[in-house]
Image 1 (cartoon, rainbow, N blue to C red):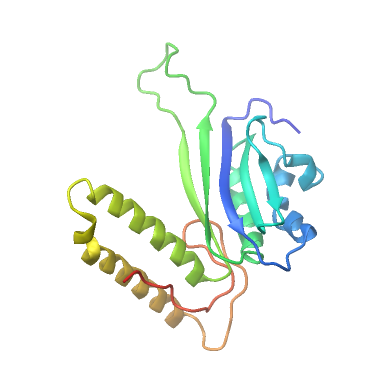
Image 2: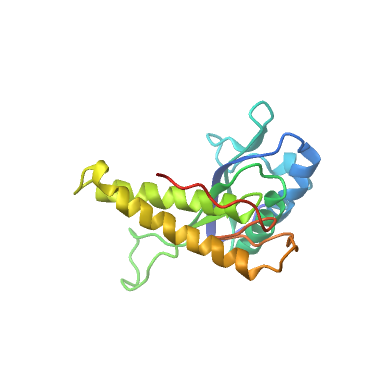
Length: 211
């Protein structure tokens, strides 16, 4: 169902490795918040993107990879659908993964005459999904290391940055320990929330470190 005069064009992008035992029915149920928001009756009905050149939402069974390169029209309330989607995908994910979501302000045109004080409402958010908090923190850690190293290599040789990476590892190790200590012993919480730091089941092993 088209959302006429929708204030945003929303692009969802990410690849999520799924467990080998996951079925299409489970995938459809996990992604129901997205296709239902789009006004479709099934995942298949909503899988195509608003742009023909984008592959949309698809599951590559050979690689067990849920691939999303999908654009739709929507509003700020789409964030709730994203949160619900993350909780569903957490239950199916084999590894941690990042999902990028970009909100493009369709009502803003910087070339039109208008209020010079008016600013675009474009926004970008990064969501993380995974089977447990450790898997999610691993993805967050890897992305942060990549960003920091790329930035600092403009000024330093990569071999000089081992200490910086070690400090990032320590930050995530401390965060993981704090999370474990906050959980009740012997209880594995189910579910999770979308957004940065979101996870599925609690517990799990500590994220690996780069030595």
